[in-house]
Length: 481
Ligand code: NAD
Image (cartoon, rainbow, N blue to C red; front, top):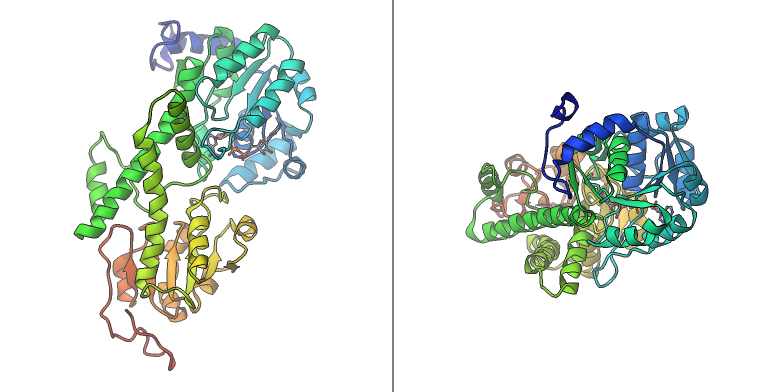
């Protein structure tokens, strides 16, 4: 092994049995990097393009949505992602990132083409590949021979191989290069990825991909196209199962009066288990886990077997939201008509404005059905939420949300909610009841301010029935129940 190859170590065997990193690293250093087009300027495409532009690549983003295009062209970001705005502004103003509508023009100027279009779920769980198919059809017709198509979109196992069969006669190679970034920490995840998985059969196409796209020197794992695709689905499905597993433990904790926070910590100290994804709460949401679990289950079913663990993970996940609503009902004597519920947080997790499959949507919808008046706040996701939840009242600050509330229901663990002035909240609410869907608040501190605290899988901490919640309150002062 020469000095170049020793730089990066070796993660396994390549598809041809060669030690995977050795040839890649040597080629990387030989090939250098080339300009690229990124098709799809959404969460994955825009973050990838911006990070690569920042690392000195010349990137053309191809985006069909004219509003997104105009926003990006101004150097502004159409999505909320910490750190992205500054990096994108710099990339656009320096000319290293440009955006355009015309895929054919982009194909004329770039022989490395990254696909980052959406693959949303169809009603039967299968991934909707229509955007990918539409782009591939244009590539088949217009891309120059020697073009490498890098599939970053999450696609069912076998998609890359099928695409390869279609494009190979035109001298185009397909490389499967799944993306593992998480919204809310997307830039960090790209800069410090655990691994750069690259699946393909053509050594030169794989080398060109690694050379240009693995700009931050993540450990490279070379595989077949299909293995790369399955690594992505398998990883998301495994993490989703882990979340559902700890949620089931939390449900058991509710029954046996143990604190799941202690249980999760103790379990996670076992290095084989680890602390990641061991946070009980409202379950997984967002654009990836729910759809990827469904798509993997669909793939398994198509191959003739039932992947029971995936079905269980999904069912547990859906139940968590129902359990949360039931906790809210239990906390105020079951009936929600005329009750005012303050929802703190709408995004599916902190650090993003993404509402796709967010627990808040199901929860708010169910509360409205039960007759509650729902007042909601989120630091960044309210524009989209207004469109999706027409029956909800939206307010611009969390203190306005809790004013007159019978229950404060914490749905997204934004840091600003954890540092609220709870004495001020105590003076604003109608009843001091908190249902903490993310176990991110301090029950002791809240009890000390007269709140009844209900977490997920934590013993309820109720202050004594009959104690007045606020001496300085007027005649309609409530009793803590
Ligand atoms: P997204 O919906 O945010 O972005 C997709 C973009 O593609 C949109 O802006 C859309 O307008 C554009 N588009 C659609 N058709 C197009 C076409 N023909 N030409 C040009 N642009 C087109 O989706 P996303 O969240 O970025 O996800 C993209 C893929 O990456 C999906 O397969 C997803 O599963 C996967 N992924 C997402 C994440 C995540 O956290 N969002 C993480 C890892 C992988």
